[in-house]
Length: 68
Image 1 (cartoon, helix red, strand yellow):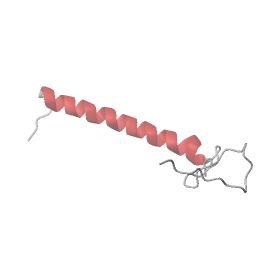
Image 2 (cartoon, one colour):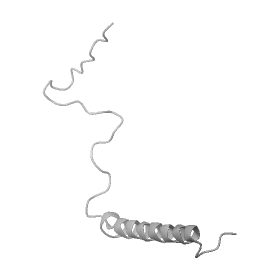
Image 3 (cartoon, one colour):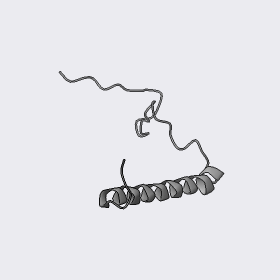
């Protein structure tokens, strides 16, 4: 059985319907200090930490760094 389509008569047919669960657009302005300074610093620090952890793991596998 096919479910009937729900029609919202308060908006025109040519206007696309938006999901009620997702907000439309970002809540933070594009020129905020978070996007311009803080986020790149956090991502860079996480990248450096990842590289360091990979090097330590490789050192343990090779035997340069002793594992208990």
